[in-house]
Image (cartoon, rainbow, N blue to C red; front, side, top):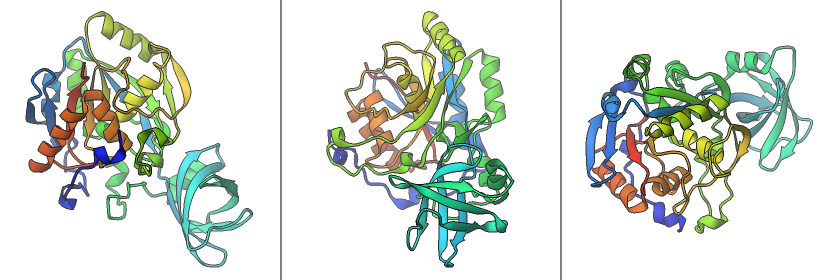
Length: 342
């Protein structure tokens, strides 16, 4: 298939610029697996779609305040977006400035902090933070939440909590696993009280998740790499759910990619490392049976993934319906529940 097969027209007014007052106040579009009927519901109804034998798998990555502002020694403004933390001092990052700084250049950051350009790794800059404070302390002090490019405003205090899931635990992401943003503490409690099992994976979402596909032939696209981890306890939980006839439900495309990346040998295995798994129509899913996900950008790798999962024609119909019914799109938008096409 081609990139252009995944284009759809989206009015700018449907791109959510702010989160709703309550996490669980979103709408929920449901696609019936057998009839292809589309139902418009509320996210609080999600619990009614779950069976006690099911397993929900969440991505417990934690978004770091990865956007920094500063100046070159010459005075030119610099914007830094951390892509990957290498250690307590060094990162790989995107940099925006009038002229790219060279190796050895010093960058003066807010509040008197400073970093040094070590070199380049392809389109990323290798930076080392100077001084005695840890990287985590520096980011906590001067870092901004890395809102995606389609949110056309500066981050504010509300984003510090709302662009973060309530179960975030493992620091390292520079974008939120947005399907998880709909869950509040009350919903998590109701899920447990119903008896539905919960498990976690970790995938540190990178800024490449917003990188456009630049080639029309999907076979020529090079997928960005992201760190992921699937622990043994999650593997056991998946096996138990399958054995009792339950569904493995991925909460978000990142949980999906983690589980499927760990299933490339044919069945799910505990593992960790980098994944650049690119899921397009024709991919044979090995572990996941259903998924909760937000609505994704036109011609994006995430739209290609959900089309592979539930069927290209079905998803095209779903998105047409969502636009007509004025669902809210992207990170702070509404959600949909879909199941794997046979």
